[in-house]
Image (tube, rainbow, N blue to C red; front, side, top):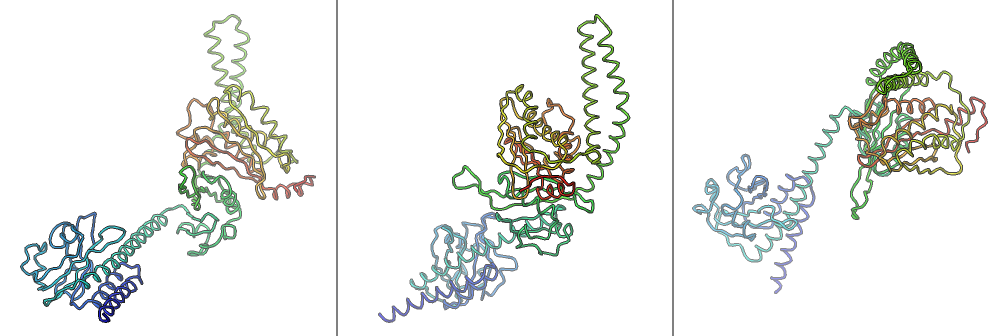
Length: 536
């Protein structure tokens, strides 16, 4: 009885040694060699091998050998699944014991007969409820595997199987991580990833020269403390506390003349309820678009020159058409319609020219009159003036504005124009009978005014260009009239007031356009101009 107990204790100790040995590394090759060392230590035989199932190839592949006479690793021994002696062990999922296999007709690899194996145990290895490979234990002398020994080998094989499966999963994860890192580093755009609290956990190669960073310098830091440009950091912080289900796109102008386009996207995981998403972090893509702005400036200069040259002859044309309409007397309905079409077309061209020149006026900053503005009064003017357009399309405007808001310091005429452009844009793209929301609120040190619609939404690639002059996305409803300057005017007005614009949108889920004004900046403007405004 004492001998039996001691044998069982020895077997348990052997299993524990194997588990401890193979559990010390997640490297696949290290785990394979450690497992073979442990098996040969607890089993009185000369050789062992480990073969793993390659499901994609439909083969059992020898991955490690120890004590064999021949080399079956340099060109790995491969056995089609279900064939040979190993195939029987796998098919029946049981330990298979053999004697001398030199002349065994079941051999799938004839060269193995030269090994001169006199006894062999093929033990299936399991992991997560499936067979992942075979542990081969071989003797070059006659040997009988006892029942207890077979039980120990089975336990050892499963320990090794789980360890190898974990190592293989780890290798796969490392490969995927390396592939992802290579993809990120090959991007010309700067990419920063954070967790849900805004702590940076990844920075790609392109971000380092863009922000003059050393390798990994800001990994582990909060965006709030990262050595990024203040304008960029402020925009990022605002985006991270905004809508957690949509992308946020904005632009930053740096003192050195560079322009950066920024896309902040939440990393969303489906929650168990299947009705909501859980934000696990953020991916920030930053692109240097200075060259695009330079090309845009060249185009703008040409358009401005053309607009000035067109204004006078267009005025003459409108005057002539008006005189025809007034002085021709009795004309046919067709003639009257043709004249009206001409006047409408000329008026649209006049509106386009006026918008172009308005942009020039805004960006020059000449003639802008800054004074404290009651935000509620600004919003009420926009609400009143958009009502006829909303009524035409049976749309509802929902207003959410607190009773108390700090004032804006700016030009009422142009701020009103920017607000009306946002409302008009929402009116155009919201379907008949739809709903538009107008809101204003204070978020940390910013005053935010936003207009939300339930229109068709904007694709992510279009969002980066939506505030460009004359740009209309390829998916825009061609029946919606517009010059492509409305949002460009909004952007120019807001930036002249030291603020920034943003868009948050998902296709088929509406869009939110916003104007963000810095309250500390407004306070400085008021103080510099000697204006009396309460920002508390």
